Length: 366
Image (tube, rainbow, N blue to C red; front, side, top):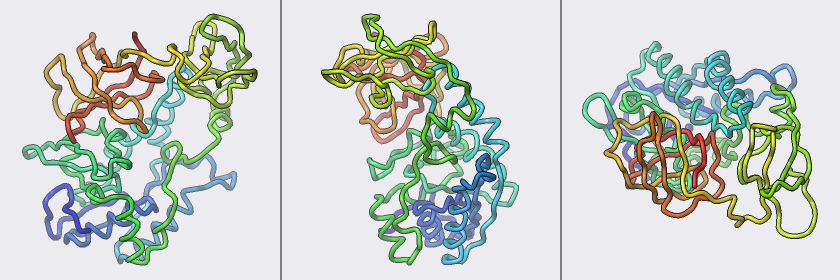
């Protein structure tokens, strides 16, 4: 099961590993030791709003990380980046929600915290490389850049969340489990006797965890009620705020009656109107393309018009598209109409097993 790390082994090189307490980063630590690296683990605490309410998922995560380090005999440091996370990730997340978007804080967290604040802290502690438990790979490109490659386990590939990380940082990054499947990772953990071998994979908002989204958001944003209408303008009910819904959402709409289920088809900020369509195959849920904001490329943009593959949400198969410039952003045309294009989510581009970068969707078209 041994697989090469993202960069050639450098015996004795000091690697700072982001150890979360989960099985992926735990096995990443073991594999780095296998390759002869000097490994130091660093546990990040990035959320503390719930500490005084008895809800503190980071406490259990840190206990798990401590057990892993004791088992593998590697040093463990802990650092609190909660202020950075609030200022650089959570504040932006709330602003996007207020604007009626469907933001992806995991993408922003990787760029701003894990591969910026964390990397600078790692270097201050003497590390020359950093590592995480992400399912991804890197391919060196010259002396100061790297290409982002998809992982062996297509179902766990996390390049979608990594597409905004600077290629110069990727050049100093190791993804030790990128050539493994999740099953391989758990098998290694069991063989090592790690207590988190069968621990459930983390989900929910990055570093905040699984929450009832509406209840959680209400702690920070005030309700902004408005009408629910169908695509023809007929009233269907009331909603508490557009920020609580995303395009393609089915549950929680409070619309009964006969026939197929109802889905969110659009948000009209003027009038705070939530537009719904009946049936998953309703034409209002499909679009031929979308516009985006300014893209991020790894490391340089392709020639336009570009034809390749795009993912418009994480849990989705990449689809064929054509991409052209549109001002500072992009115009993406899908080869086949795409379902539930959600402004605020990322459109991420692929060519073979290489992630080229991506951009935030601003508007569905066609």
